[in-house]
Length: 450
Image 1: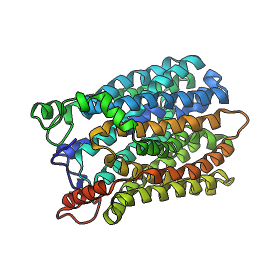
Image 2: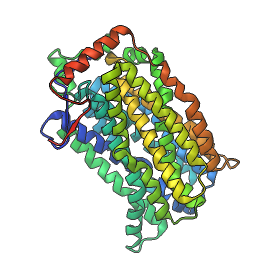
Image 3: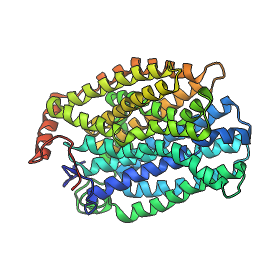
Image 4: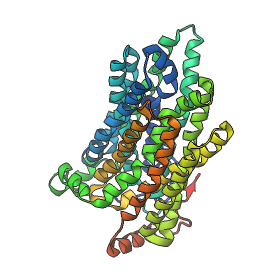
């Protein structure tokens, strides 16, 4: 699709334009979704005692929390093409708030499992975040915009690990028991999700020139039927091997991050004999790297594109994945807490830069099926998380061994990035579009506070 008037610079403190409102609302919405999606993870030591869960059952709930997201991500990308990101995001946030607040009614493994399964749907918010920023920003900064919005959203994985134990502790100070405390703690993110959904609908629009229904009425956007219909765009994306190569790539970066978000707190709690609050704080550091790490992945993607075109973007993606795999293997071998924290931060840097680099490539695969491509690739992250979860649900494999095996898998599958190639015509077309977007601006992917 040909969207006009995209922003060629990210002006962080300017919220008067639809581009920047979409940018800030999309990252904030994704950030809040993590509180609903993984809010229970740092409280699992308490939930484990309350519901008498085994390691296998905890592993099954982890799988449930990310498995349903695979299906929803596939659907949400196509839905964005059809109704636009504004309506898709608002609906997902409001509907997703219901199971987040409802998990407090779980009183057995089975009901807890079903609640986590339902909550997992809000993980599809990532696809809408990337879709919306791609609609709003030009080729010279789209990598940075996508990476920053997703990175600041993923930051929710870190702040959740830190804040949810504090919310839980605050509730306990009111004289509430632990059994009731973790249930009441989950009401907080549910309420915020609901309010955010209403605000997203009120204050954003689908594209720089208006909402999709307005653009279609003016003939600026194809009608959502025929070759532009949901089925056709999904098939076009599904037939492209590059899409599936990126599917695997995202499985070994974002899928790994989701896995760490689920197990980090309980890993540090058990392996280093820490308190729940301390384990949550350390686990939160992993996600807090999203303040800048994923943005760096996008900035480097834009810089590599400046000098090497689309091939440069792919080359950077491969480098980031290899460094991620090496760092994960090293982290798995750490037995001293200080060393483990240090290597974890290095690993976090590269896994998040790899994610930013992935979505620095996605917008250029198929512009007519952008939602479908973003949805399939995004679903890959959750497939990776589901597959990785099987390493950690077995009583026969320790978490440390699982991390080691996971690192080796990342190193082997990083080569899939090299399957992403572009025709000379596409390379030339995007190089020209890049230069047009740069215009008088200096520096690829520049962020401005103006």
